[in-house]
Picture 1 (tube, helix red, strand yellow):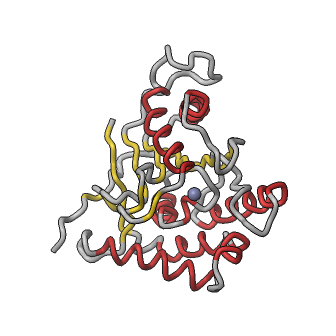
Picture 2 (picture 1 turned 60 degrees about the vertical axis):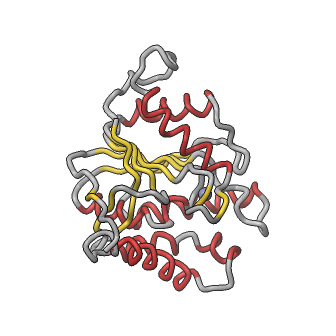
Length: 240
Ligand SMILES: [Zn+2]
């Protein structure tokens, strides 16, 4: 049997999930979010762009509001009502102090114990090249978890420093260390991706329901091999 994954920590109350695009959290992570909100934990989403460059057949001015609406509907499926958007430009997010400052300010405002983001590595599993937005945001999130706690870095944000982030969990990593049993959250994880209907219809000829189900159930089954046979969503956990 493959090396087993550790269960994700459960002794926390507030999480902030920070990703580049509407839909980034719905490719698996949302099933874990459903499990957490069932247990009474608070999860807030912070999306760095509105995903306005994500639909080839829809110009950005029209795509942005559609994708924002789809992301709010996706979040609601898994028990998340707090969804915020930063207005960085989709496709050309720059890693740098401006981004780190925006993320540190959000972490100070929300005071999460757990911060979640998406794979910032160069590739997906060594096979597919990752996008520049995912690389920039994921790296900036990992950095901003520390920035948020240092009063001398970005001293002019509205909220007080917050040095209470205990872990950053990276979803979609090819080197996961931890997992969440999503037996109860899996179906809502599927439905949360289905909510990105306009996006998926432009992406593939497959029906959104079938597309979402095969992907999310596939991820959960693959992870089960390393988590005692239970359907799971994996994370690479960075303690702080
Ligand atoms: Zn994305």
